Length: 269
Ligand code: HPA
Image 1: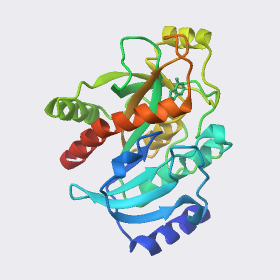
Image 2: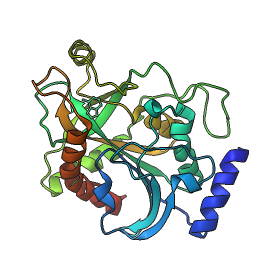
Image 3: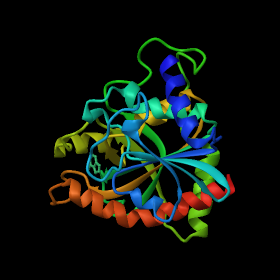
């Protein structure tokens, strides 16, 4: 709680006690969401108790700006478990955003498709997830003032926001897919055998993030919506070898579609 207070004091001193409505976590290659947006920028390394993110394609700063009349906090780059951050550190910003007033969290990520019912460049609405990380961000002593010990997960991804996402996609003529995101720790990509197993488990895409954030967002009783940008076919689904550069490039293309969709949703929240 002392740490949270220090982080909040610092942010409030820079933003003039701004009260936020919405936060958006941008995944790999999705940084172009911020093009043309002006506001207050804070580098992660200047914010007390924030983690470190130095993955290529992640900028490492918070942008406080207005979109469609709503005060938004945009996280340009997240803290991954595979970087050596604990899941408590990886999800700490969400606790801060809640204290800054947000009611809604948008989670975005780059992900690989486990089957060919999805195409590279698709946007997939996360209808649910499978936590295959073998750990959970809520492990440890629980602070009852933040949330309950054993949170229900049946509405982790807010139904009303899923309905809104679909209607906004229709309005924008975006072919929005829908499916299940499975998270591994990474950083190695999956083997072909793992992808076959994940497909049987019900996963449509795989990635290395987002699930801890969704768990904490649900714990904090925030409205949560998640989108995957399908940047590649997962191992064995196509002949291609995976590389991070390709993930970034496809992410950039999808980013424009996804930006429009999120901005329209924000205007209607
Ligand atoms: N696997 C895991 N994480 C990913 C992938 C993938 O194929 N693509 C983008 N992030």
